[in-house]
Length: 503
Image (cartoon, rainbow, N blue to C red; front, side):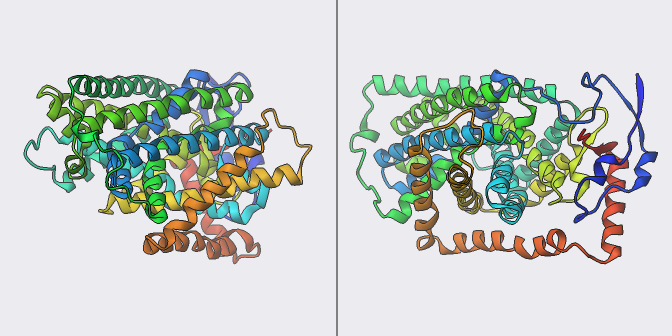
């Protein structure tokens, strides 16, 4: 076991806008265990191709398929239009994922959209993305997934009614803290959990598909006899149905957040995308067909736990098996989302857009512990919000806006830097198609749900004064820098963390 004394050379090369690590960090001496061969403090390349596939599928197939069928059907109005929305949402996500494969291999940095927007449009738009991702997009997705896990795991205990919301919140908070601790301790544990629970959820969804096929084979077609009856063709409501559908596919870009930890990213990133997205789309389509065959429209819309209602109607045995399978699914999705989303804030802090404490890595586990803990705290706070579907609408509108910005960045870089090395170069038709559809989804709901859209825009714009004060303003009073330095040093000692070795 070798002792390594950590200095502050990395801090000297980083922006001082949100505080640096003071020279007294030299006092932080840690025993470094079995780490990388070069013995440098940095994130390690632990993810292979199948880990990448498990990451994407595991995050995509989480709570969405067990919550969003209600939102899609409610806004689409009919079974047939709802299925069309599910297929189109998968196709749009696939196009977006291919565009991100070009971005991820052209700009091989962790941080996903943040890195791409920063490269194309500069620090302010990138900061605004990170701002809303920090307080809306990432913790909202994690909170919804954790709450869905708790809802399903507690449902068998309260057989004749829904579990108390306070019990759901408490269990969701406990599981979020537990998985944060695992992510802080060991990346290999995280990937093994992800692989295991991805396999479990595919088994559960396979059971739903087989049960639905059996019911269909026995001649029960009454629920899908008139698939387009009641369709709502209002463009605003179609966009809202896409919001719920796309929420279920959210996570297709999460592997881009951990590019620096992916082995051979130039090959494994596009391969993982091309395997994961068609697989997820086919599974979603078949599961929704099974739902619609077994459950009537009224039964589906009145259920808070669609898979449990489905299982109870198929056979009494499924009434206790389904909550277990669904809980495993959401557990794996939450694990992957915590792992990937924490890297966004790590990269943002590394670029000086968050306190430097969030850009630190534990000297023993090589994990970004402060970033993980910070994300956990915000997620726990958002669990206090009652309306899950309001959370979905806020988060999806904001995320769609910045996904549109990222793809716009791809088009802009094609024009601005045509000679930039692009290991993968998709047809120009794909980003243009994605841009047009995403623009439709961003603008049309403004007259249907102006309140949600207005709050989303307000969340984005609220980051501008924060950027001006804490990032753009260089000659801040000394007491602000002193406070930031004390905060960073405290976190360094508390979490046994230092800044990444940039050499």
